[in-house]
Image (cartoon, rainbow, N blue to C red; front, side, top):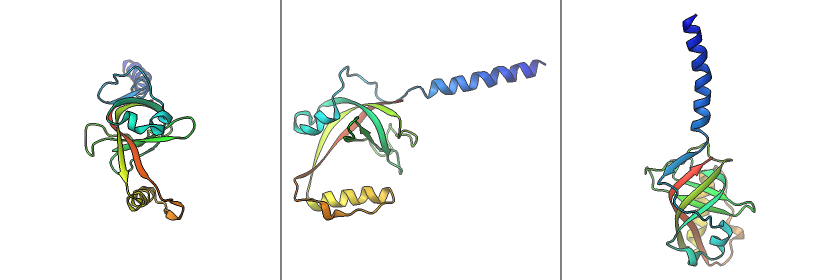
Length: 156
């Protein structure tokens, strides 16, 4: 009888502890900023934010399938910003993050690209996702990637 009571108590406690563990995963440093900068604002004027720490929030739309070294965060209009962390570093984005929400802090980085680099980059992303990339619609530029060097994240 005692062992049955213990098993029942454990069965009730384990699910509660799992829910608490998944209610918000903190990765990397502690979030420090109190103001959220919209993804649209960063993408519209990246030079104003280059090298500055910002906080963004949105829906996680994708995670690196190889090492968990990046994720995409989208605003309600579908504008996305890539958050890149060090390969095999202290932050590894979990594969179950897409579909959830994220609050992320990082430093804004502008990466200028040639047309060929831009095409190669998008071809690489497509291949990672098992897709083909058609570069026929790529114009003359200028080309650059805007991303955050991730420092802290909270996933819900």
